[in-house]
Image 1 (cartoon, rainbow, N blue to C red):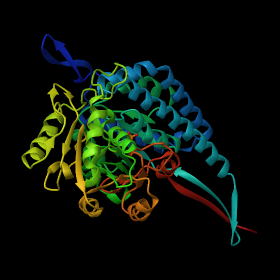
Image 2 (cartoon, rainbow, N blue to C red; image 1 turned 45 degrees about the vertical axis):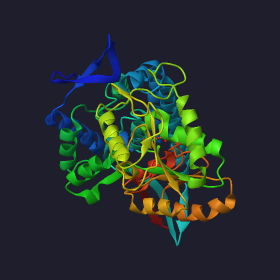
Image 3 (tube, rainbow, N blue to C red; image 1 turned 60 degrees about the vertical axis):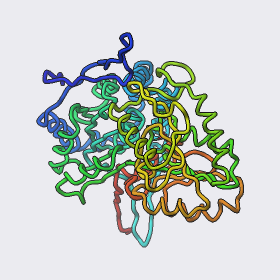
Length: 478
Ligand code: G3H
């Protein structure tokens, strides 16, 4: 509906230069909903879910497939506008913005293909012990979809699509950075879905989201972001056992460079893993354990490669380092650097940590020890801590002590070195990467984590299960 209440100002992380001064750049304004309006959106989603036969939750997959395909077509038609917003609002390079957009389209395609397969399978009768049964899936109810600022389109859609595909109704709140991005989509949601099926709310998450959960009328919380916010939201629900929570949270993924590593490859992957999109990825490599015998050469090669990375505005060609999206991040990264250097580590590249407004030059820090905050805390920015190790024991202790357990990368060309580690590590983290960086994709692979890194699994097929429950219609023969 048309909003005539207060507006919030949305600023870009891309600075406005006036002479030598860097000024904040106002990008636009978005509605600042109060609790009453946010609760009205939840009501609309609840009513649309309860409405009964033939409406979204029961209309069947043919109608839902049509709607998802229309939504995909609408996205494609708005590609340029969306990429521009990803650059201006989140500071993503054009290549990364295009990557995020295109993988979202693939997510649509794979979800639709899976939905079609499921529709075929659900027609099959299963007979066992004199009972004929037809299995199906039913939606769970009202889903609250909350994506993160670093993948505001792709990871919001990674929950929105399966939720809608399985017949749920949705309240969606854009991340605090990436708000304007949803404006070109509002008209699409309105045109394609019946009233109340997709409701977009804007405003202060701290204030609005707990109020929604406190009503007990959110059936699914799909949240990707910080663990502390996730805990607060789950705890706000009066009956948490009735809440299905799908949570993607923090991580401190390690790379381990073993004596048998191909160093050029390890450097290439570790560089990409730690610095792509300025390290603002939950899957980024956030600590590198390097065998002491290789450490000096590894660091030399890493510094050479790092010096070639270009820093600039998102639309410039061939760069990775763009302004940091979160205004408070540079100060936090400096705290970690000060703590590490005070305890004996050094910044190995001369411009490491140099900050100009929201530009932050990547820094390689060595030798990092367990006494330093950077060893444990999730930097979510372009700091690359390197820890020299003589064997696997310090990595073991790191994994044991960490609150996170998402992925790990092992580098070695020696199968005898890798084999004993792989089985042990698959029981401790969700994905073991061999001679490659950590990452979420391909998006059809299960994406999850252990400990405080995740609850539930996102991936095309798994997500369709997560956002639905099994149904069974059974009949005794004769
Ligand atoms: O920030 C967390 C994202 O899930 C990372 O995804 O590995 O594709 O960059 P990515």
